[in-house]
Length: 441
Image (cartoon, rainbow, N blue to C red; front, side, top):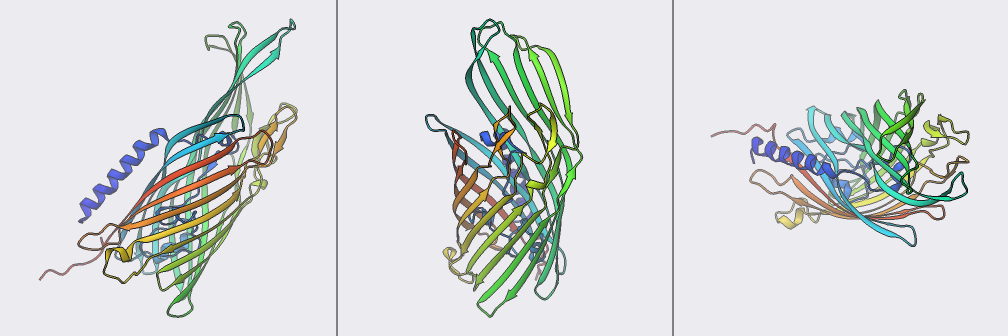
């Protein structure tokens, strides 16, 4: 496959991915809290391993979870990696159950070798997603003593996006260092509307609007140590720089007539409302004869030290540290290839599996009038996957990765919603020898 065909396929996938993004969203009621649902930063190879990757190191695949891994990229290759997910979700609060489907853009990345022991990657992926629309009916006592029925509609959309560039440098011996530097941007809107059924009473609307623009920096280290000819251990460490984000959040309190026209509007601003957490990650990867990779990761995100705007018990819209809590994540994953040096096609198929667990970072507000909060829901994920070589006359290093994921989101409070997700993740890793010099006889 020549370079033009490879580039054409890459652009075609990117176009298809962008088109699928027309239905991008989370569909989760829990995305109304915090920045929404956080992306896992997993790519083709580790989608089937529950996102495990801090200690993973390969010359033929991009690992953006630890930028130190870029130093292992093949000096003769240009790698383009892109992926999408198809998702079916079930939401259950006990007596009621509903289903929803959506697609999502997972990532677009490209990696190559800059110089000896120095690799580079650029990428685009979501940081968080928000998407929900739900309604409930209530009764409110009127001034005349009668009861009015009204519908409370909660709706949210938007998300935060991340674009980054990173380098990884092998210092010599087993040690490699890396850094990802990027920007975050996006808009999130959460709206609560109370509409009365009598056709006369004005509606009340409260809208929270977020507009984020900031930077993001992550550092990585890998110690890749062969034990003997068969066994290799790799220790991976990552640190994400936490900082305050000097962006404001706006709250609009509005009154609407029965035709939807805004009659009155009051705007409240929460200044310096956001922040990003200090993040610490550690992972260990064991490789056996280049056939078997087993990895384990742990991540701590210090969201409990981060500001986020809330409407408190005194009806003040202010930046507070009461809405978020530290997030702990654990995952284990494995990848098996029957025979990397074999001549049969089946020898190069990669089989993957993983399990992940994480606590939530955004508390759910159980009582807005008293400003009390409930612990964030927990998540359990099981994955399986396969990496299928795309053979051509030059190499079989390009891979089609397909993985299935089951995730259960378990809330901690009473009368809350349980979520079950089934995802099909599809990724294409184009790995072509762009920098190889061929001799012509």
